[in-house]
Image (cartoon, rainbow, N blue to C red):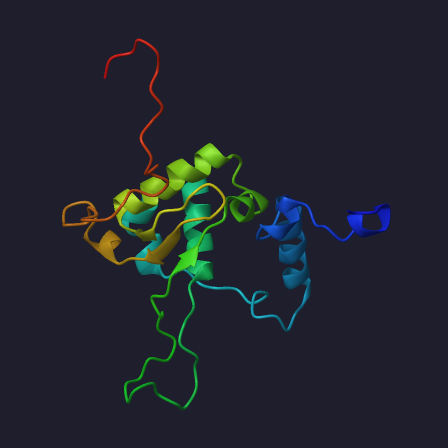
Length: 181
């Protein structure tokens, strides 16, 4: 039998789940890293002319560009230095690792709504900026990888092949009463 003294030790089910950051927590993190001059996030990154002047970049809306910039920020690069990895010089090149794009992070960076974010991710996938590694579910964001398919836009083979659509629901839609399909 539980007493009042023991009741505070039982955590609610919601607190046991993995904690997803809120928009306010992401904004606070962004402000702190911008103030810290020694942080790796306080330094700027340059978007090359090859990226900026390419038709695949020029067709993007302002919010789609912000999502793309966030995706490029979340990619890790091989460190600069005298060492080489496996005998090849990889310094400064992207690792092609996977990353996620949480909705709250993008809202904190200025993208207005979750619908705009979902449409932007789909557009970046269609044009060839992102590859979908794993689709997300309700509380888990999907995993992405930056792609080079955008270099063939608009005339080449930039369409995604054998990839799930970002944000695509894997469950069948609910049946409506009396509706035909």
